[in-house]
Length: 386
Image 1 (tube, rainbow, N blue to C red):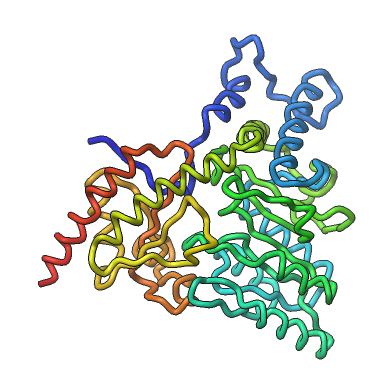
Image 2: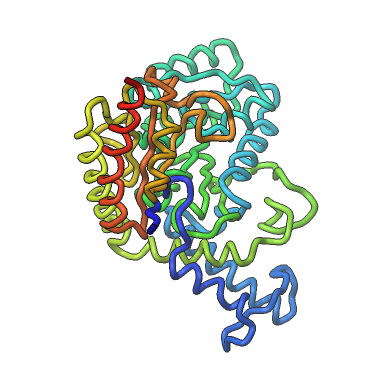
């Protein structure tokens, strides 16, 4: 049986350009083979590797709209988030953190471990309510206890809703409050101009956009000094200790370079939208299935479906048996045995969601396989309930 992977929002396969970028380390017989050298050394091998790292930094910076010096390579978005939280709270000790329940678990848990988290409400589409942000900030200012940082994801990882990040940044600027943007779900799928956005910190992960796993970046606003999370070396200009993940960084740079090509983001988004529209059309033709999230401002490559009367686990398993891989944010398919906090915050059923996400390697055959399998799986499961 052929397999059809529709879970790109969890992780996307490495692009061909990424595999080519890593090849010089893995194939020593190649004429362009690279040494396993420390880029912090002054010998020839070290300088060769340093050039690869800095070329990748330039590519990532160009994709995300900033200068290379603002890019700090990390082991992924999770580490970048922890570094952002640590830096904000070290700069503002004892201050609370503002975050919505729709933020990724690493954002919420990293914050809760070190500070009081004041929750920001969201509407039924999972969008942060700007009026509540303004109110919380004014109350905090009046009490003389402004937050260390406000978290605002660029787009939600489960339902795809785009957040009003620019407006949140503007509200926080009035009070001098830092803003951290988790862009892991959105980077490589929508245009990002970090410098124009005006946020203080932004976290991304390479594997979400067709780069290698185990590599990401924290973007730091120009002029902002952030105490590093990891100590013990002067790598990344003293902002993140430890030998750089050379293969991961090279691959990240290669993926970023591809996506920074003129028209590439728009072309991939258009193709993703075509695929997700076909997914949604097939799914909503089944009784009791609806689409969650903002219908107008959402990530093109992701569709979150609610299924009346059916829990996600048997649907996931049925699709998997048919060769189709998808995901759900509810308890049945994650390590945490609890309903999706994102859907609960939106006021919808947190146990009955299905997330289908496409990517650079998705084909019409993948979508056709879902369209054929989903109605049959749902019909069979509903028949068993009666």
